[in-house]
Every structure is written in structure tokens, then in C-alpha cells.
Amino acid sequence: MTSKVISPTVARLLLLAVVVLWGANWPIVKVGLEFMPPLWFAAARMVLGVASFVVLLTVLGRLKLPTRKDLPVVFSIGVAQMTGFVALINFGLLYVDAGRSAILAYTTPLWVTPVAVWLLGEALTGRKIFGLALGLSGVAALFNPLGFDWNDTDALLGNGYLLGAALAWSIGILHVRAHKWDSSPLELAPWQMLVAVPTLVALSWFREDWSAIVWSPEAIGVLIYNGPIATAFCFWASVAVTRALPAITSSLSFLAVPVAGVLFSALLLGETLTATLVSGLALIIGGMALVNLREARPAEKIGKPRTHAESAD
Image (cartoon, rainbow, N blue to C red; front, side):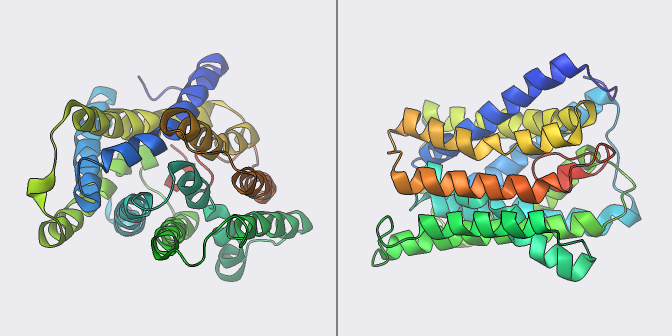
């Protein structure tokens, strides 16, 4: 792996790999939570992510400290995305099916767009307005009384955690859009994860029983998958893909991740593909596609829909 732009053929294969690996990680994380508490799991994932990125960037010859100019985005992403998003996702998965969790977590562009218009002065086009309406109607479909039990306290709590995770991700994205980068997102990733580690470890130490952790082969496999594969490899691959393929291709293709999450959850965990789930997914993906399409210009380098991977590598 080098910093050179890869060929389009290799980029498409990597894109497919990222969609599959990130999509499959939703049921894998849910399984992992059967063996370890959510905050501990989040902390372990960040520790393994840091270690994997140190090795990766050392091999690439790009391991370096962040500059003073990049420190604000290191801390904002470290707190909002690496700490808040990951922890809230884990809490949400305790109560909510993995497929539904993937859908709600990927509603982030719907919450980012109106705030970006308000705070960053981005244009609100007719396409964006329609996309927002379409996406929000998908969220409403997921919570309609015929497909959601409003009397289930655990369901309300779990879905609240997942929407909170999407909002936490949104905060990081808004800072990413406004930030002027010295280093690339790839080079800053380990430092952003390192910011999350002390907070997650401390919260886990005070709130969770570490003696309840079950060191089974399944638990170890989940951790290995989440550290080197779903975190380090997939992040590197997503950045490489966005450098090699047109922005529209990469940004819209990454919307397939929640679709893959739903399908893998049905396949691996036996979750039911209900009419409510499928209709909500279709409306949300359609809305996010319209919202992102206006932003997808060839000169931009966009990773997953509006994450910190979107800045130039």
C-alpha cells in the first residue's frame, strides 16, 4: 500500500470490499456485545484501531504527529465520532436489531444538511429539499405505530441511542466541512482514536463489570474484525477509493453500507425484513442520495457520505 492513486479496477474491488465489510460489521458488533459490555467494546475497538493505524502508517511512511492547526479537528472527531458515535451505537445495538441500527446510524446526512445551510452557508437547492423530505419520511416510516411499539421502553431507549449517534457523527462532520486541513484524514485517524481511548476506558471502568467479559473465540474474532479489518483496513480503503473514483461514484456507492447491513443482519442473525424496515430504508437511502448528489463534484474527495474521510488525502 502506497500513497499513489490506485487504478479504477482496484478501486472498485476495494469499494465492494468496504461495503461488504462495513455492512457485515453491524451483526458482528451485535454478536460481540453478548460477550463484552458496550463501553469496554468501544474502548477495545479504539485501542486496536490505533495500533493497526500505527502499523499501517509506518508501512506507508506517513506516521506523524498532528500539526497545531489540525488539533481542533483531532479533538472534535475524537470526542464526537470516535467516542460518542461508537459508544452510542453499541448501546443502541443492545436493544435494537442490527439492520435497523445500520439504517438509523446512516441518517447522518439528513441532520447535517439543514445545519450546514444555516451555519456554513451551503446552498439549499430544490433537490436537497426533496431529498430531506424523502429521507425524513423514511425515518417517520420506521417509527409508524403499525411497525414500532411506542410502549416498549427498551425500544425507545435503543432507537434514541442510535439517533443520538447519528447526531454525534453530524457534529464531527460539520467541523470537518469547515476545517482547513494540514494533514490527511488517514494521517489523523490514529490520533482521533487515541483521544477517545481515555474517556471510554474511564467510563467503562466506573460503569461496567469487567469480570463479565467472556473471552471466547467468538469475542476474540469480533475484536480482530473490528480493529485491523473494519477500522484500519476499511478506513484506508475508503480513502484510497475516493482518490481513484469520481466523487459521485464513491459518495453514492457508500450508501450501500446500510443496505448491506440490513441484508447481512437478516442472513447472519435471522432478522426479519419487514415492510416497515424495507420502505424506511428505501426512502432514507433515496433521500440521502439526493442530498449527497449536489455535493458530489469531481474535484472533491468524498469518503463515506460526509465523514472525516471526505477531505483530501
